[in-house]
Image 1 (cartoon, rainbow, N blue to C red):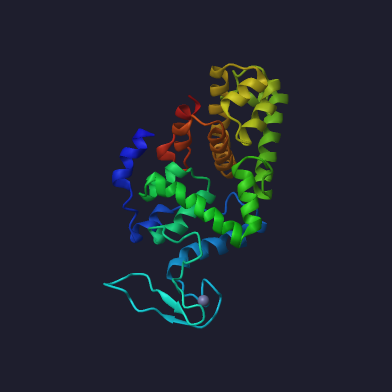
Image 2 (image 1 turned 60 degrees about the horizontal axis):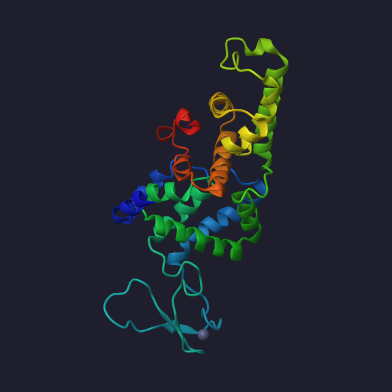
Length: 291
Ligand SMILES: [Zn+2]
């Protein structure tokens, strides 16, 4: 936590506008979402991206379409204020939204894209050069608007963020089934293990349960408890199975990391591990994760 505070002093400048596209390189904000919610997610991201430049069509207080630009009080003000001809109150384009008062509008869409892609709040803060405080606040405020503007997307997001709902979208479900079938075959047919990292792993009857817990984001502690295994063995199994998932079922790999980050978030005290849950291979090593 203290490290985060130190970082705050120099990371809240925000990524420059011309750096945003590169920061999102290779990020698919829709990859974990069910296809039925893609449109809602794109709509919400679009709204976040355009909200700051939007022009109101009605008064934020009374809804009247009759208003004019308010006289600037002093100096140059970036935001245009309007004055309603009916209720005579002042407002601007973000009045009444949860975005009011938030900084760096050119990063809002990027922030939510990374959230959808499974990135943790501390990691996004570092990536977009905003303070941890701002990153946490954005998360809260964006969720308020998501609930308002895309309720079904919000429901899905909330229940998966909390791991109350472990169901996977179709594309992921297919990868999960393929992976579990592959594990079953490995268990049944010893010859498939020859010359692979699985050759010397024992207790193969536990592999299917382990594999299932792995892809649903269970923590090491969860798995060790469930299968009565020690930490050393759990870590070794995780390294080997994750290495295969990463190569053969990358979408599933990213999903299980996201869900595992959520699991650690739920049990707390694992901040550093959660921060290391990123999609950037340069920032992650599997052995470090397993420790
Ligand atoms: Zn009004």
